[in-house]
Image (cartoon, rainbow, N blue to C red; front, side, top):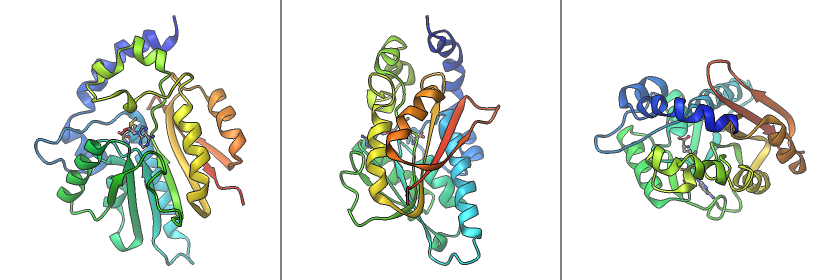
Length: 242
Ligand SMILES: C[S@@+](CC[C@H](N)C(=O)[O-])C[C@H]1O[C@@H](n2cnc3c(N)ncnc32)[C@H](O)[C@@H]1O
């Protein structure tokens, strides 16, 4: 039996309680939820939002930086918590936030949360980059992708346990990395010079050795790995090849 099968059923009920709590969401992400809108997050959402705030802050501090930082979140989910938490941290004229998801209901829900928080972030439906204008150039493209191998997710009955409306929330294909591979491949055409991709996974489902193999063909430079002790998630940053 794999480690994920042993650990997940124990940890998951605790996480389920924590990850839907609007008070906690406000404290962790600085995002207010309208009543009747159900939003949940996972540990990767938390780490990705912290990392994005830091990275955007570093870029804005560059002395010669005048243009707004351009951000694209892939897979915003029900509340676009990563993007809206970054948007809440910086003056609106200094960042431009776009976000997409393949699910129309998740995009609608995220738009409602954005309106409730007076954010001018722009969200729309897209299957990966299918509906991103070809001329777009982003400083950051970030994603908390579905990364659980299909068989593991089915055995753990994740769609039922997580109470989500479809497998796309977690299903990363045979080895857990199918959506990530496609994202890494397509993202390169939408990065501005010096731009980077940022994505988060849980090593229990997608080990570091596999992530490294998956990233290799796409030529990202200066790959950084962030793995705090206090969360079971890992974030990777990769800069566009010159
Ligand atoms: C693990 S959830 C992350 C949700 C949210 N960003 C968060 O951190 O809580 C993965 C999200 O990616 C979206 N997704 C999966 N496949 C996608 C695709 N091909 N194109 C766009 N979004 C996709 C799912 O609908 C889901 O909202």
